[in-house]
Length: 95
Image 1 (cartoon, rainbow, N blue to C red):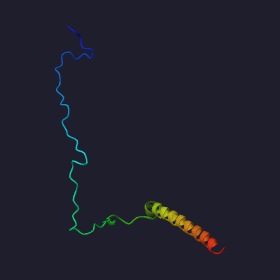
Image 2: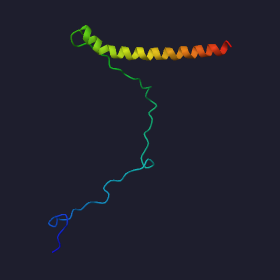
Image 3: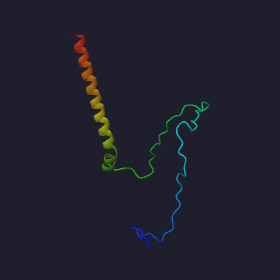
Image 4: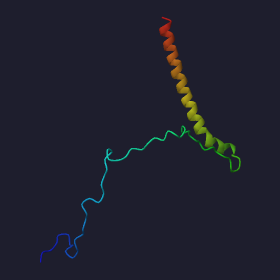
């Protein structure tokens, strides 16, 4: 008797089908139709509702200061770029 190298001589063979699923290409799949009867889609943003007690000064700062700080940084950068472009254009025009 020949011994199986993996030690599985007692197990029955398992039937594994070659390919159970058919993978469809893009050409075989129907494309979604656009429904023009509906109006334009508008974004909806959830409004924050105050359901809990009022925030203390420290809690308010922890919640709002990161957003205020990042907005301020973006505003400063945009203003610096606008001023730099304006001074360059003014220098070109006034030559």
